[in-house]
Image (cartoon, rainbow, N blue to C red; front, side, top):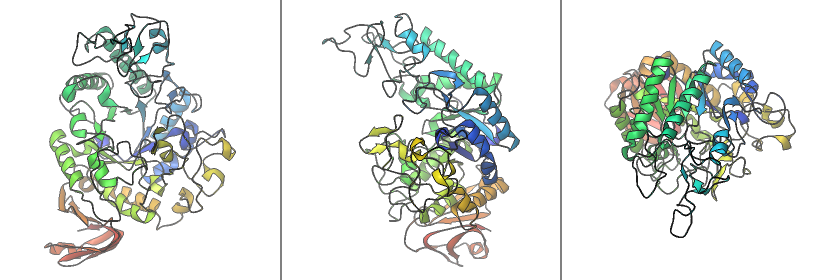
Length: 538
């Protein structure tokens, strides 16, 4: 496997994720839509965002909020039309913003025409089927399979919910006792790879810049070391480079050191997975159990950005170093504030007072930053939100708490929609002190203005603060301190106590504060107040 060559703009990008049903409602039906997003593009341009990633907006019965696609080539009516997407792409381009769509390649809805046909045709191999009525000795279906809803005997293998039948990209290893394990070059897997090319070509024709790929590592089953999965994606990468040069592929893999060599331009440090996968992200931002954690069984211990000050940045920094060595380009690793599947930064015991230090770190570290909508104003994860479109994954985990409507102003429904409150997609944060864009834009000391200033600083000094700039770690405890590009000193203290760091760098005392509060530079020590942070120009 060889790494792809990402377009130059990606390394210096500031990504912004939009959950379309919760961002802005243009027609008063209580659900966000593409025209609503277009009407708010000036906010994103003002903030400094350079690329948008939209969660799935294709036709769907919405049993998993759009991650159950019934038509890959048509925008879901509740979001608008294909023409609305084209208009959004054009208006974003006028503001220097690219648009990426969310591609769901591993499964469809059980209402997709492909699946409805396969459920009645034993010769159709687009999905993973066991056609025997009694594959097991007791007549039951093999573990994990769901009974066929049609005339076809046997059952199918879902990827996630039962309503999401897994598309067949083959198995890396065959077993004569399990005849559903087709090789990766069988007819069904070949048809599905061709379909991915058709889908990407369709939307690239509308001017989108590329795709974020859902569950990118899951396509080929039983694939030790992701060898066949890597071949699949590097093959698609080569096709994209030849037919659609410049198109971007971002992976939902969770391990950039593996995903980028497998053909992706970038991958996210994410929260999910066991040992070695989600730990780097969770070691930074994990919060109390039950506040939006996909995997609570493999915890890294105290997280670094917690008031108790008992964590360490070492786990994340080690993973980052491993990633750089594996891919040779630190900009190919993306560090998100959160996403639609796990808790926001402002959740559990973490307070608004702690968020500035988080952004000072995220926007000066040599990863590509991705901001989940609303995190720029400190929107809260709301634990007591009703289940919506498959949001509940367990007794202690409801993703809806991270999917509430964007808070634009102090008007009813926080400016998200003109609909009656009982028709809103999800309830708006009911707190009297909930943050909103309009209030924070008017306050020079707000989190929103800090995020904007840090983005501007990063973009104006891309050679130093972007992925290509050098990184010198001075301390991985409290405070976290590092030098970027040999010119910028960054100091953050996420703890609720004063910390001091001794140094032998006389140039620090003469450094100029660019943005921050609570940090004092001395000739031989740095003193940082609780939740203090500072970015200094040397």
